[in-house]
Image (tube, rainbow, N blue to C red; front, side):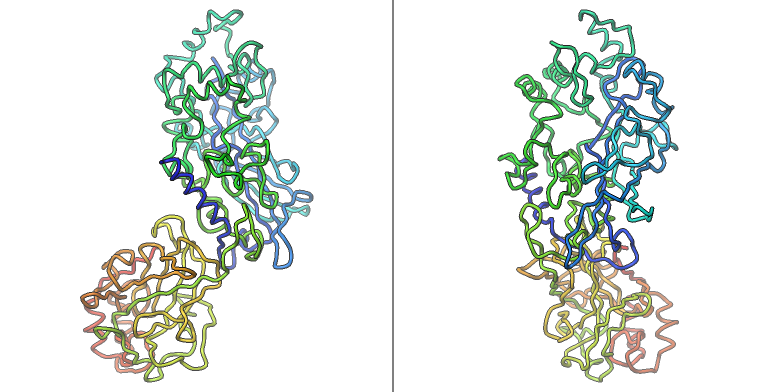
Length: 614
């Protein structure tokens, strides 16, 4: 059952691949001509910290990236390499010598003398990635899990900084994927073996093996596809003998793989309840599969298998997921993440790159990120793109003009409502051009400003940087929010989403935010704020019960700073008292600034605070 749930979740995530996102101006990584995506080839690379006795794996991390030149309405996006370059660095981790003793033993283990902080392939901790086919790559980055400022505590999920340039060395884009690494190889720390010497001494009866001739590379005798070593003829591969030896002792993968602290298996399948054995089988089954002819590291579980996602989501023939390409020549990992770290993961840093690119975590699925526009044809896996317009049917009430059953339309009745939206000044700074030549009827209470936010998480993750669109509309006497014709529900010029939150702002009432995502109904989204205090974040901290069954926005925030406080009385109401018109101090919105605004609206609401997530 856990497997079925997880697979269903993954299919749903993939089906949303064409969801899109709208951004404001000013961020070159979002509005520029190029997109840079980077990733590690595996969800975790591990290495020994101490190489004086034995070595399973050296410091060796592999990275890939792709540059996409954005398309337009008339041109397709293009994955480019010729005339471009990508550099890599690890902020806060500039050296490895001293964080491990690998460079004291590299000749004994691998027969090479390496400069300090240079790995087995010649790569360092900074440098240029190499153009290979339609991507850039660097292999063997000798990173350790210790930052320069902390040589004691492992930091397995450090952020890499990749930077793309053109031939004239102009900066095109940057991105920050995770470069995962752990020293948590648990032979001793797991409590299974008393020491590495103990492990070597268990080989003392093997012909020609001297456990005292250290350091010893395990893969020198036992072949390893991970390291490309042939091993000794007649001996099982390292993966085979390890799983065979331990199959009766444990079925806990973290006894060897990193690990209880590192938690390298952390992706969307893990979050859905799947365990290692759901894909790989038990420790005994892993050993048996190798004995039956499977090549470890080169033959692994397939996304396209019939009991997983099926042929429409399969890797390229004969290739692993991490080596496969799909839509437009992009690597599968470019959009989905690395094996064991399929997005979104439970580790926040894994999600940093895609949040920066598209505004929310999870599979990279904002079509116009690369296309420049929302395409009309099918995309990855044959999935069709969404509608470029999101419709929202919202209902809410304001405390000030509420008369017991609905809201008064005094401002409209006395021709005091402006014909253009009033939110183009601080603190809203909304630049929308919504305006009408005449009011579309008299049942209008006021203008309200609505923003939509997109997040894969709960409401607390739908922060200000997740705003995808803003619109001003008319609030009607029955609580409905209408477009400029006074009849239609609001339309936002962004593609539809499945996890939208709405924020409502008003010029002298506390703003509110949906506590849960909007409900999708057919081709539009719906939300009724008025049915309970639990409909908004923070409940009655910044909201009011207006009648037995109706809740609404609290009035009295004349300066619109999110607090109903003394300044709203002294700096707004008091200065406007006795005046009439469309005024911020008119808290009950009857066109008169008078004692009723102070006594009936401001006073009982004093101390309330807007709970909109910042």
